[in-house]
Amino acid sequence: RAAVAVGGCLFVFSCILILVGALRFPWRFPAWLLLECTLDIVIAIGMVPALYYFFHFLQGVYNSSVCKEREQLYQSKGYQGFGCRLHGAEIAAGLWGSVAVVAQLLSAGLAARAYGTVRRLEQKPVQV
Image (tube, rainbow, N blue to C red; front, side, top):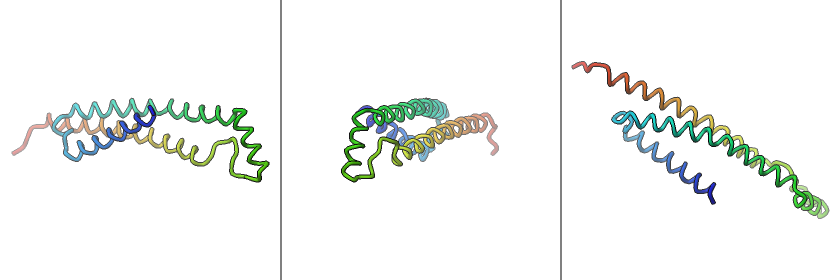
């Protein structure tokens, strides 16, 4: 349940960032960009151990005696689709998690760049 709650919070956070960006709030309040950059970095760093524990847990399950017994049972019945190894969906989840880490880091870089742009524009004298 905790993973679902955290995933839901991250989804809501992403929706809020899209809404705030569409309303051009960061241009009026540049500190928001620093907050966004910090949170993006924290999320990216937090996802790396989450991916590790995801695969570590799966390997523990697949190496258990229960899994080996079920694999033998299914093979004795003629089923070929069950094996105690990583499956495509689990590998895809890991790849998408890795893509999400890169996307969060890119988002942090863009937020930092936007903060610098806003600060430069604020210091520039207004020409009438």
